[in-house]
Length: 595
Image 1 (tube, rainbow, N blue to C red):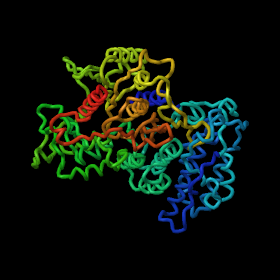
Image 2 (image 1 turned 90 degrees about the vertical axis):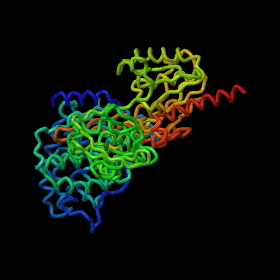
Image 3 (image 1 turned 60 degrees about the vertical axis):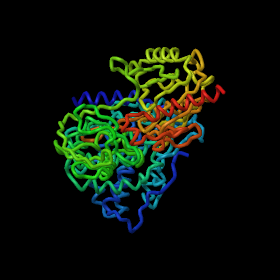
Image 4 (image 1 turned 30 degrees about the vertical axis):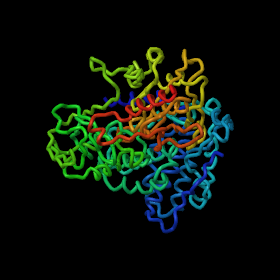
């Protein structure tokens, strides 16, 4: 099973394509009255030096040396160093022991050398390398050659053995190929606990595009988390420390391959017969999946096991990637309504009265996600339909016949758009997940391709930098047979995450396109999966997505042209208020034009 998990992770990474050299910023220098001990300061410096050397030194790029083994050897020496000068000496001697920094070419990676300066985006702060007061003159000088752009892989001094060495940065896509899992890791071994922390911190330091928009400074988190990692000695504390660090990304894409540690933290029993939404500042049950459920649609959840729901939210946010305080339902859907008890007591507000009842749960941890859209007579979702008023409705989640089956999916979209050609308006519901189909709709809405958004992909040559490039809403050769010239309303809300956000951005500038609903969650872009010592893996957003003019979308999301919020009363009545507003808008526009 473990081998299969590893294989699947590698295959996922393969599928997740990503389309001056010394960044400046803070210098890494700690003041004399630093709140952290000398040991923590030493380990912080070790993490930063080892991480940068790991990604740039030729002996690691070619697999001649094992970066993990080098770190494990260094940790005890650095922890015992009496002061910064002693630490610098240890690290300098180690760097020199790796051999000469010789690439035998000054030709930088083609992707980097051909890019315009305005398209190069600096994320990581590596100015500490040039701070001789921080590293000492010798270590700083000896690391400086590593800050030059890495060479073109075809001109490298020795063949790259990807099975042993380099795994990211010199080519597209970026992948974490050669990180070891250590599935039999001893969690009481402080060296391996630090290896886990240092691996994750450095991977995100150099291969995450959004460190500049976090609520907390990524640099400041390293010395904060080192003592946390050393404070305990069991697997649960180790996994939770890694999760707490990942949560600082405030990235709704963050998820773990094995979430057993979250189950232990939040509860082994899941209240899985309901779905909730965040409406009017409350956690509201939007639907039940079991006729015998003690919950009712419209219930406002106030307590579980006597714990106030707001306190439960704060507990979850410590370990889960919540973008903002207003965007919680997607991220917390699985864990907020869980319990360590098989028979939890739940308190809700129902019809303005407090109601308390006891559930009887099992530990299957299954979760039934709600899906918008109308079902046909057999109970299956309809990919498209024409509703009263001659308005077409498309449910993109059900337009995809097969993941990756481009031709089959295109045929389905062509069938739908031909059937909806003579409708008096179109509603496209991007509160769903339109995997593999985001490029089909724009071909019916634009005469010529337009820049729909910008992406920032990992550069090949300089760790911690990205290259921006435009993404067009469709390819000229895929032009549709006709242009749809009626009103088009695209529905969005917090359920619009990743692909739906991407899809909405591609069409939002259409002449007759109106985005309606609520802000999307703000977690867009291809992801990477990073193996973690101990056998787990974590996924996170590794490709930047921006508006056509370079504006932020991560954590902000895509904003509607017309905002329509869910209400508790509407939920209780079982209404889709956003869809109702879209129908009314189209009818109003048609009525105005008719006059």
